[in-house]
Image 1 (cartoon, rainbow, N blue to C red):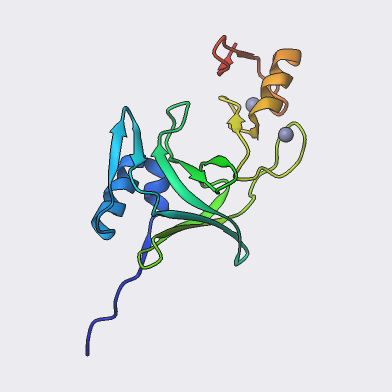
Image 2: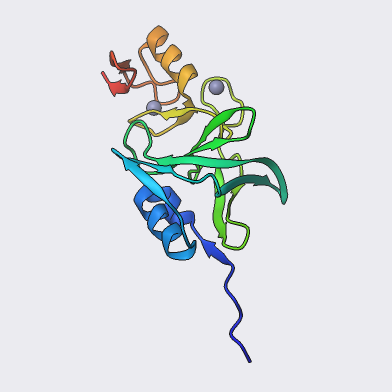
Length: 176
Ligand SMILES: [Zn+2]
Ligand SMILES: [Zn+2]
């Protein structure tokens, strides 16, 4: 009896935390993974690693990973920059938009099973994985970043908890 070969590795918690956790796990399972660290971003030297988005069992997005890095606002989580051949997209799997993230070692593919768990507090549409999301620093309500920033600039308050908010000169939502 030979031990069953492990081909799939759970990456969910690593992706939700830090890019370095993802890189460490990838390095220990994929031979010859080469990257260059530029500040807090890990740039892939070979475009061998794939990223696939899947919803309810069917794949709807696929590309090659260009780099893996931190989120812009330095909150927990990982951004994957992915080249589809026709466009470059930044994808940030979080507990809000993803059920799980799995590495398929043989296919050299990271598969993200996506879900829409929350709706934008401003426009009411489901928040998808490609959307740039922000939240109220008081009640944590989520919304499309652009929508929430515009709302706060107009009303100076959160659309849900109504507490006073403002937008800093750098575009960060702050308690007023
Ligand atoms: Zn919206
Ligand atoms: Zn609020």
